[in-house]
Image 1: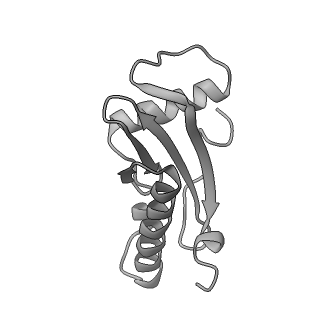
Image 2: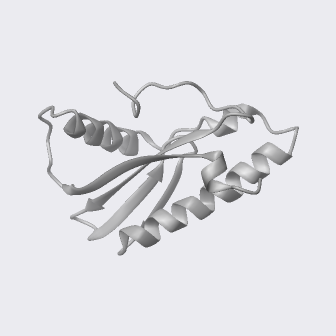
Image 3: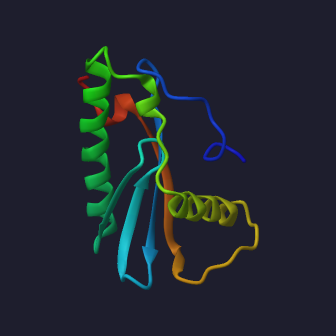
Length: 123
């Protein structure tokens, strides 16, 4: 499946998060998802959605990593199935597979990843 498909689990010492943003034609908004933390944000500006995702991920990571009682499984969450289906479709499109495109505008979709050090440089 490539980089954005199967990957190693996150640990408190090694975190690499997968994100995606797409435009929902029906709701007329951008939806952003952090695949590995199960965080979902929505709004009319994709850059603001990305910023909101970053801020939510930073807060989440800081809390999990700082507290020794939190299990690393919390760094390996998944959003609800419908978002994972969309994520997998976006990945399929990026790999040039034919898929359905009913309510999604894949021309405005993007996937990206961020390491903990990029999200929390002073952490």
